[in-house]
Amino acid sequence: MRRKLEITERELTRAEYQQLLDAAQARGDIRLLLLLETLCATGIRVSELQYITVEAARNGVAEIALKGKIRTILLPTKLCRKLLKYAKKCGIVQGQIFLTKKGNGLSRKFIWAEMKKLCEAPKVARSKVFPHNLRGLFARTFCAACRDMVRLADVLGHSSIETTRIYLLSTAKESARQLDRFGLLSGWA
Image (cartoon, rainbow, N blue to C red; front, side, top):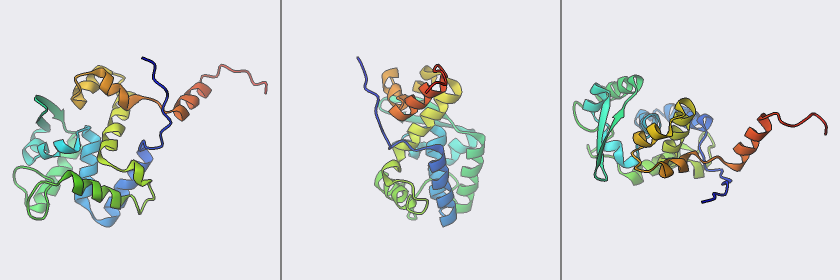
């Protein structure tokens, strides 16, 4: 099957991600800051955030049971330290870390709305700011670092590499930049 290169302006860049983190920190919204970092540093889906618990942060591993599968997500050491510090500050000694003021898990709708509010200060396009885009940034970063699509598919919980490929399709602009870097043309203009 032939795929047409997509021209998309919806991909979140690392610089824009950092701007969002900076904006959350400037607002003093540590919960949102950690939520963004957790989604982006692990590649989990927003629906899997419930598995980020005090126990998972202590062990450095989250066991995610969804869609009839169980997969293990490794949590970066620095993230674990941040999550445990936050949990201690909030008086959370066990269970889910990301909770409402009433002690319930955060809803997808709430997370989406908070992220949209956050993009106003750093002037990141609203169309780029949504939870699944953090998963895409994780996938592109993982692939660039490891070059192992099979492992990435496992980490993301995909049963098919074709699903994983969707995260890695180059935009037309990026493909054009890569072609320019090949250096296969003479200096004659």
